Length: 200
Image (cartoon, rainbow, N blue to C red; front, side, top):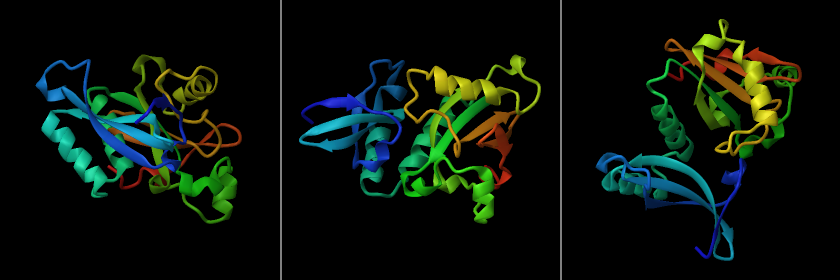
């Protein structure tokens, strides 16, 4: 490709392509390869995107072929991969940000969204990050939100490639097999049940 560089959140505005690569951290044949996403920057250069899947060589090649043919939705593949990494944990959170096609709604307050009779729907968003929550540190669904907001503004994890958490973003909290979605509003967070309604 003539050179790779890693870029952050808004990568899907560029043309994406995928490669099957050897997993240097493989624990066995079941995760010996992975599907790596790249974004073409032109002039033979590409930016490194997300790892979309880890598995056998055959599974990775099949997945790449379906992505290449447009038979699979990239965002759905990425979200499914993230969720599988955290299947064993009882409490997790995810950060979602508006897709490029919904740029006009970025940074808009929830009152503005409601005034236009819009819904905060999952189909308009792409997942940017997922991690576990320490269950012992909170008793209500809302308690982790301020800590998440601070962390994804002032101290981004090294593997986070989205925008700083801001107005119009959605945080989904999962616990005990249930989930609730919260819109990052002008001041604080507001629950948006429509975001997770019927999704699982």
